[in-house]
Structures are given as structure tokens and as C-alpha cells.
Length: 249
Image 1 (cartoon, rainbow, N blue to C red):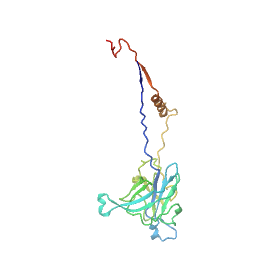
Image 2: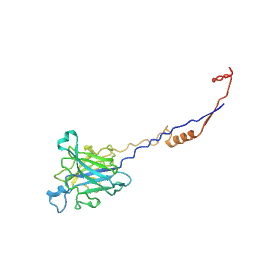
Image 3: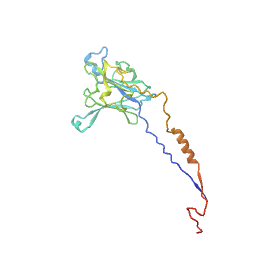
Image 4: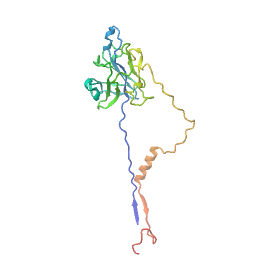
């Protein structure tokens, strides 16, 4: 008797969810900025916010929005918030590039983008959300209890310490340790922040790396596909002493 037994392999392919964009909120002039020709007591009007693309490819910002939230005064204990302002975004941002959202054309590099932002940042702190065109939160800064850095009097800005996420977790926007006060008044709009993170050097391995005992994934996959397509033929011979028994006895 000849029995064909097919060994069917079920290949489960795990497809990771789409990775979040590398665009982050990189610097905030919540206190305003020094502007030539403008009285110092009016500098608070010249607020701006900077985005940074930490990725290796350009990113479209069409349909994106920046939301500024603040706890409702009467419901702060309940965790409820009111939307102070929403900033719709358009355009794009190149890899390792910057994108400015400003309140006035008088602010340096204001040609990048414009929004009626003046006076929308609350000096006591806010909750910022950066959402993509699908409404997914790409970056978040929960500073409802107070801004993590910056100086209202000197107009030094609040700069992100590690926008590349090399020394801190990916979701470090709400970590006060990931922010610092800019070294100069007015900050660094459209360019690298005044301070960069101190990243520990990568450990150097031995000159000759040990040979891995694991088979590469593409090899395992090829073998699995081959086995799934080839039937295994099992010949069962009738023998007198067969464990299957003899119908004649």
C-alpha cells in the first residue's frame, strides 16, 4: 500500500505596524522672541515652534496638525482639557531638516511656514500634540504643569536635547530631562539646537566576530517553502509481523 502524506507548513508572516514618522517637535519659543525694530514689551507676540525630521527621507506634512491643549480650570483635577489652538500644516520637511511655524514674517527664517500663532502659547505650560493626516499622534509634549525649559524674561527658548532619540527612549517628548534652555536669546530657529546630547560611544567588539549559530531568515524561509511543496512518500509494506495486523488472521 502506498500512502501519500503531505507535510503542510503554515507560514505565519508577522507584518509590523507602520512605523511612526520621525518628525518631532524640536524647539518652542513659548515666551516669544527678540525682534529688531519691535519694542521689548511686545516680543511675547513673536512666538514660534520648530519641527525636526530625524528620519532618512523627506516627510509630507499635508493634513498634519499641531494641537495646543490646556487643563480646564474648573476640571483640572479630573484631567479634562480644553483645546486652546490648532495649527494646520502643509508642505514637507526634508530628511534631517527643519520646519518652522511662526507668528510673524519678522521672525528669522519665517518664509518656511506661517500661522497665526502669536499669543497662543500659555506661559504656565500646555499639552502639545503633533498629529499626522490620519489623526495619529506622532509626538507629544505634556507640559501642562509648566514648561520644561526656556526663560520668559531673557527670551531663551525651550530646545529638545535629543531629537535623534540616540540616548533617550523614542517617546521622550514629555520627559523634562530631554529639554533644556537655549544658550542664547531667541534660540536656534531652523538650525541645530545650541546643545547636543552626549551619547555614550558604542562598544567595540572583538576583531573576529563569533560565528552565529542561527540560520539566516531567508535560508529558513526557502527551506520551509520547499518542504511545503514536496510530498513525502511513505511506503508501507505488508508484512506478517506488521504492527498494523493482517486482515487474514
